[in-house]
Structure formats: C-alpha cells, structure tokens
Image (tube, rainbow, N blue to C red; front, side, top):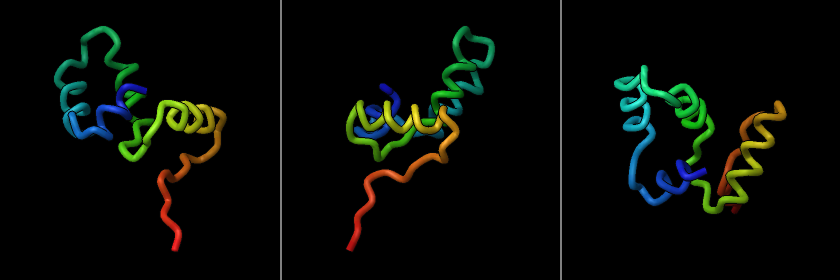
Length: 71
C-alpha cells in the first residue's frame, strides 16, 4: 500500500490523512481512503509485508504487530 510507504518515509502522518479525508468527505473515493487509513502501518518496511498484513486482517485475524524487536 502506498500509504504505508509514505508513512514509513515520514512524508505524511495518519492524522493529516484523516483530516484531509474529513475535509473532503464528498470527494469520490474518500470512503475507500478512510478504510485504507485504518489498515495503514508506518512501521511496515516492504510492499509484501503490507500485502500479507492486509490479507490477514481482511480474513478476520487481528492486526499483527510489525517490526518486533526481541531481547
């Protein structure tokens, strides 16, 4: 998801996307944007990681934690 990449590179923040979506609620596709924002994860480091996470969540599995550092 391009949103994950933009968040990871700190080009935009989730709150900025949510504010834009709220201000442009009547625009075409904004409902889909809101849903994509729900699935966004700034710590995701690759497109395949994002795809797997979204597939798991859409299948009903709880949103997994990403980039876990174990000691």
